[in-house]
Amino acid sequence: MISFETFYRNEYRAMLGMARALAPDTTVAEDLVQEAFITTHRRWDQVSQYDSPRAWVRRVLINRATSLRRRLASELRALARVGPADATPPDLSVETSEVWSEVHRLSRRQQQAIVLHYVGQLSMVEIADVMGCSQGAVKSHLHSARESLRTSPAAWDEELL
Amino acid sequence: MNKLEQRLNAAAEETRKLARRRPVTKFDERAQTRHRGALILAAAFAVVILMFGLLPLLMSEPTGSTGSEVGTPSTPMTTPTTVATTLGTAPEIECSAQGVPLPEEAEALPAAVATTREAIITAAAACGLTALESLAGDMLTTSLGGGGVENLRSWENQGEHPLATLLHLFDMTYATVELEDGGTIYVWPAAATYESWSEVTEEEIDELSRIHSEGELDQIAGYGSYIGWRTGIDQDGNWLYLTAFD
Image (tube, rainbow over the protein chains, first blue to last red):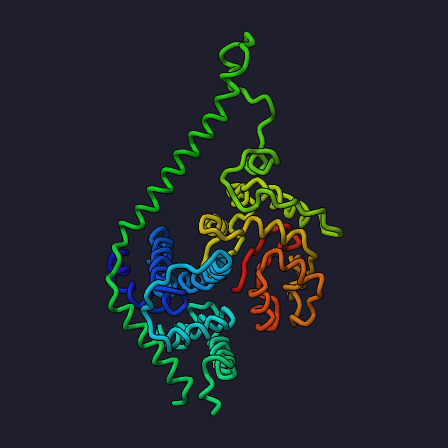
């Protein structure tokens, strides 16, 4: 059985990439990854016996990430009413940030499918395992997500030209 | 490869590179910080419990009773669930449900469902996560990522408001979902059972605005059907789920 420490080291950066795509900044992404691993650590005896502990920890991550952003959005709205916050230096290019902003406007399941597919580079089988749905449902989420992104007015204008 | 695929792939590649550049945060340090915090909270909670438990004994007048009677409960023993869900019990923690008006009685619910609903309301209003845990048993799902009431505890700590949400949900109109096996699930809010967001009435949208921001409701409307906070109890009174956006 793999030790938790090895599992953590092996998976951390892949998890961080997916978290970063779903989170508003890297600090929040790192917190999300830690939260997911803390949950995993508490249940490691059980999780380590699963066929795919990787899928389990990814599932925890993506669910937390998409839940957390709802709360952060509320906080940001509240902050906006108070005044501008200190800007932190961007760690992603404007173009990439725009891409993730557009993705964040998709439904929760569509966001998850997009991030697991493009950032996580998981197969359809793996994504279905992480999302707890059928491969057909994954394909449907990805298809709907792409359709929404294509018709989104903000980021994909060039697509229509 | 079309433009959309190119942009998604480029964004994903840049994001993966960023992640690869970041140092792997030491797990133990941060986890233990949180555990230390939890231990301190637990210790403080234990002190409060001890104080509440011992104060009446210390304050009471001697009655001349024999030693063997000291500590004998003055009321019949009850199950932990009953104790923890009694209104007026000191809250386990500060929680979002404090100050939220209690839902009114729901009409036409089967007794088992009504009893569970009342027990959940009572426990949530008292911030009684332990009581909710007893009520949930192994049946409750709060996230596809796994977990039951422990998620509610975590979300409360993170500043989300699951316990307040529970009270608001049970104050909304419910609907039933008939299962193929003949069972019935009682679902709050009713909007969660509609095929399309277009079926949600203005009055229901007003109700939902208690638990969702305008932006979230727009997002939900864009999705096409209600996927926000919802909870369900089966006909036997089993509390099945409290979830959102899954």
